[in-house]
Amino acid sequence: MQKKTAAAIYSILLENYPDARESPTTVTRGSPFEVLILTILSAQTTDRAVLLVKEPLFLRYPTPAALAKAEESDVEPIIHSLGYYHAKARHIIAAAQTILTTFGGIVPNTMDELLTVPGVGRKTANIVLYHGYGRNEGIAVDTHVRRLAERIGFSMTDNVSVIERDLMTLFSKAMWGDLTDVLIAHGRACCTAKKPRCALCPISRYCRYYITAEEHVKE
Image 1 (cartoon, rainbow, N blue to C red):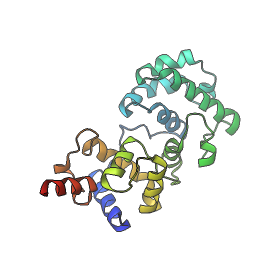
Image 2: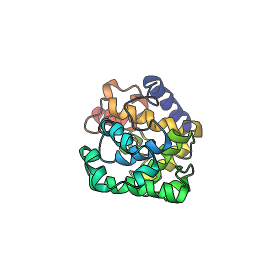
Image 3: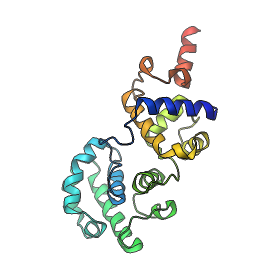
């Protein structure tokens, strides 16, 4: 895909989902510490589910120092509804301990440092850097972004590392942070996993999935 086409798709999606970046129904809002912990907890569950535990979790553990001292058995009941609560409790406590002991209680603001925090991969690090610190260092590739990148034609693989590189090549750096949010918004509203709503899609004329389906119909 040409960069000009990719930019046109981004512009259309941004117009259709103008509030994607500021949506209150996502976990990427708050302090860097809150964004980090909530993003770790969001694995294999929905943002809405995570937001239900946000208040009780941070009322009890408002800082890395507080969470670092927590017992897993005390954290688990708070996040039980999210699934995988044993592992998630262990991860967020370990993350808080690393932030406290290695970074003086401050969530690091570089990719290399964030990747040393337990439970943090490139996706989470990119989210923390952009939504916590306003820094575009890469593109967070979650389930929606991976699915849409393949369907639309931004990338030819399901490998998240390759997808991120392909997206970073296609889109200008100024778009990287918001690109994740608008693709997630489109993935939830229109290009769903089970049944994409192609007839209602504002970018169908550019979409590889739609164009290929139309060509098969004509054959």
